[in-house]
Amino acid sequence: MSDHAGTHVDAPKHFDPSPGALSIDQMPLEDFYTSAICLDLSHVDLGAAISVPEMEAALSASGQEIRDGDTVLLYMAFNKRIPFDDPRWQHDFPGLSLEAVHWLADAGCKIFGVEAISPAPEGELNFQAHNACGERGITHIEGLDNLDAVVGKGRFRFIGFPLKIREGSGGPMRAVALMD
Image (tube, rainbow, N blue to C red; front, side, top):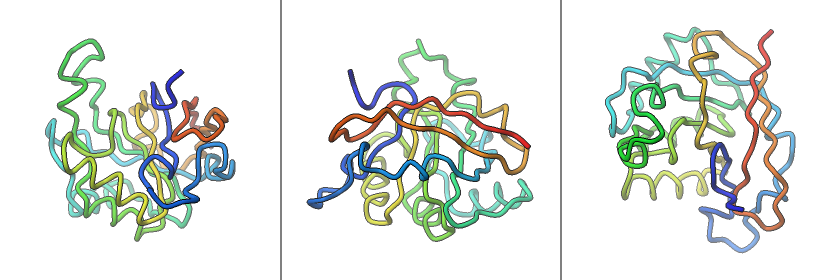
């Protein structure tokens, strides 16, 4: 079974080459039961790298703030625009610029989540985004769906416990939002 299939979270071990980088079974469960918000980035072009000003505008439009330890989900309407069985689904996804990954970490975000198979557009930028997560002590969830159900709804409780795979570099999860 792959530890990076479907909706899953990357463990630090996946992108941090340091000895002692945490595997999925070593990550604290409280990291996966957090306060969360979902930002609307559905207007972003396919394949685009989302800039810090775009992130700031989405946060402002949400009427929310990023609090220390938050999970920040990023609705890009990707799954609505390209169906899973379309070959473009594995290549044409939007994602974060390197600066936007650092912006999320600076704001206190512990985990961010995207609909696509990676947190940043395909290629070198995706590699850099993964490495930035390691440098900043944050991580990300890939393969989310149904974010249209939580975008614009304010703050909610995010629950997404990964499977406990011994020494896994990631873990499949069932992502749930509890609305107040």
